[in-house]
Image (cartoon, rainbow over all chains, first blue to last red; front, side, top):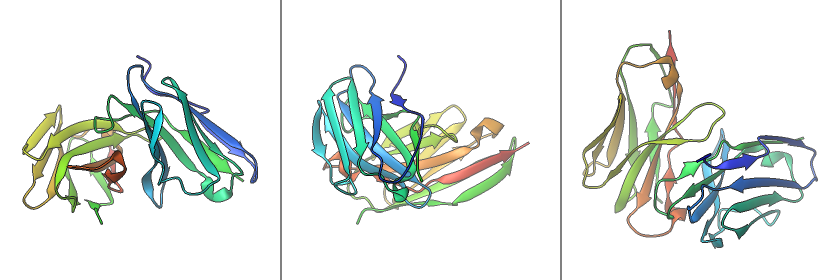
Length: 113
Length: 114
């Protein structure tokens, strides 16, 4: 198995632009998580899905952030409009269940200028 | 509020030496405690997972211990190697509730020097 796949690995954009991050979970995993990691705040859970359904999005910082999971093999995290304070590494993780071990992707390093 | 505190924040050791990282938590009751290793530029990878009834769990040169009474866990690394240089993150899951209540420590940054 290729593990969790994220794209792009790096994204540099200007303030105000729309950013879309993509994730392909491990096949057979029915839980998917989006995290943000910064030096100041460490790992923060933004949102997670069970069986493609958003369960808890209370970690999404603002309405500028949205996430979708149209099917079991694909999820997106969108930021519109982006701001410099959104600069961070965004991780996607999947697991066989919401309480099982999570397998993390390599992350997307986002820089908003 | 559930908290997980890790110490030290950073640690530098020489290759071949042993070291111990600490994790104190307030999550109660809790279901399990995990240690993750995160290499620079990569996602965290699970090292060990322990339930509240387990005292120790090993994974090669990594040994995690858990004292549920004092709410402390430690990760001991034996005969360190350069590849052990990474951030080590302690994560605690509550007994009930959603994945939202997973509590992450801020990590210990370990540097192993030749």
